[in-house]
Length: 298
Image 1 (cartoon, helix red, strand yellow):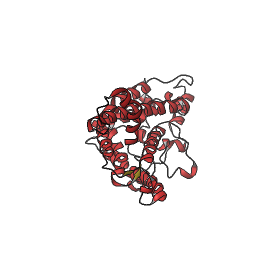
Image 2 (cartoon, helix red, strand yellow):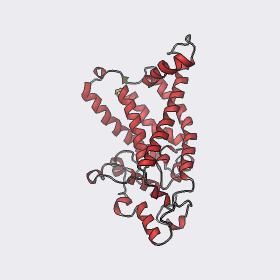
Image 3 (tube, rainbow, N blue to C red):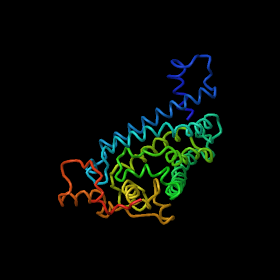
Image 4 (spheres, one colour):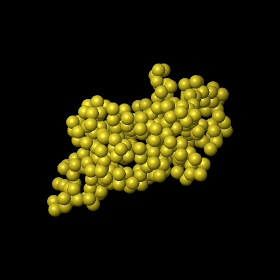
């Protein structure tokens, strides 16, 4: 994260904000800079990528589903923008320790223990490490003793839009983001690759909430896509994974996506429309649960 901080200092903080007498490597200045950069960056990624997905990928017909809440998109955005600044506080603490040199992040490929092969391996291991950690953290957040306090707000969105991707309780959001931030404290990782993976994580998180259930046939049993994650929102006890289905299979929580069996949200909408229970031209703005008995109650 020091790369981002250096750019912010060079182009903004040093010439326009801070007095020249305040050193760029002074801890308090770094913390303030990280807070600003983290909150601004998170908001831009969330709103920017979320908007692109919402307008160009998300199927707006899903808003006719009986489980799509009234004013849901606005509520998702409002909740996420309230939550993100709180999530940033412990996140910045981790970023600060990285900037102060306590992680295994490195600047040049020749600093990698294995050179270019090591850089490529770190990309793969990052995905598998974080997927494993998030599976167990996510499953822990579903424990009956803590679920209602932290994770239940995210499950309000039974049929999520891309903007539900970051609409978490702050504790939930930080815990599920923690594996991304602790990885470079355990394993070597190139600083630029770390930023690329950080953006990728945000893109992926939005993608599994975007309602695009298409998955190449060969990857359906491997990749935890939007169809898999939508079933998690609908049926609660399945598909906890982030990228892959591996840990769901090991943990006995894998469910083949209903959307890929002709029993998903689109099929529900078609059925209700054919029965005259939905207006095929309008958007269902009410939480009409009586038409959604197939959804598991929490």
